[in-house]
Amino acid sequence: MEAIVKLQDIALNMHLEPAEETNFNPAPEVAPCGQVVTPRNSPGSPPAKMRRSAVAKQEALGISHAVMPGGKTMPMLKTLLTSACERNCYYCPFRAGRNYRRHTFQPEELAKAFMQLYRAGMVEGLFLSSGIIKGSVATQDRLLETAEILRQKYQFKGYLHLKVMPGAEKAQLRQAMTLADRLSVNLEAPNDRRLALLAPKKVFLEELVRPLQLIEQIRQEEPGHLGWNGRWPSTVSQFVVGAVGETDVEILSTTEYLTKQLHLKRVYFSPFSPIHDTPLENQPAENPMRKVRLYQTSFLFRDYDFGLEEMPFDQQGNLPLNIDPKLAWAEANLQHDPVELNRAERQDLLRVPGIGPKHSHTILNARRKGRLSELNHLRQLGIATKRLAPYVLLDGKRPSYQLPLKL
Image (cartoon, rainbow, N blue to C red):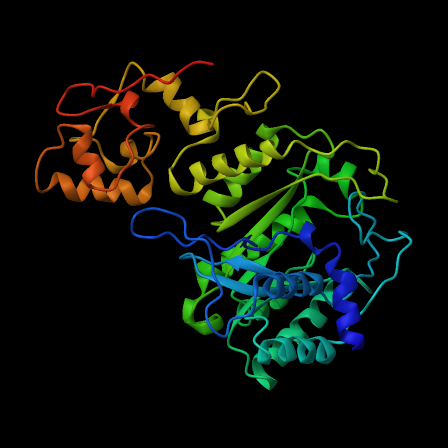
């Protein structure tokens, strides 16, 4: 019971820690005719009110529904080894000096509590972070001890996302890579100047960027079969957006480095939201649409081979909030120089709005069998044409399309 109370108190602020995409609302069932089916209780299934109650109980413990690569949804416990911390990050609910009740798990205690939830079928994975007590190295050792207990004593084979503490040593990083499916180091800010305004006790290059560099170095120098489950873990990071006046150029220049040089799988963007009894409690919350544009741009870096210099920044160094950055690039570059879908290379296809990695392969495969001469050919391949039509040629001709209505 004591462990449950700890998990519940810690869970109150764990939504601020991004860990895999989350989706609390399952996709609706769609009938073959295209109508959304209103859920009905099947014989023996609990009524909707009971299901909602079960979800609420999960959320109260810090259990979120993580969306994994490939689209699989997995219930995952997000928690901390301790909510006490000796760092004083200005935005953080767990910062030193803030007046609220703290909780600390011993490694064996947390591992046992997680396995009870796992055996009860409530969770399949674990995201484990921690406040910093007695220094980052000592805290990292306790995180590693917890992971070892799960993997070795309890033979847990499921998903484990492990947080890396600022300034963790290379040997600790390598050990973590043999235990976890994913590692994360939160940069919080895009450079040392902004970090000083956000988390003054953290050191940007030595404590935050360096561990990510060392993880990539290990990946490059040592064989992947030494990692957990025969492969090295993926890495991710996070920025707090809108707290200290950083521009999108600053955030995305660092994001591009993380994505293209250190091969991070994902960079998370958390819009700043003020927390009571912190130095930034009177700072206004950030517009959530800014997060959307930052995510879209980070995916252009990661999956579409766009560069920072191609993004449509305004004079203040920020992205427009009223238009998708890929669409803005196409408006400026493809209106008068459309892409011929029958001849374009994959990297040029990816520049067209409405064409992603999957659809680019579909087009390349279809071209081996014949010419694409009308939009209907694309629709037959399962490709929506509304977004791409203004920016392409089909057999040297612009396809006809309806101009959007201007309100």
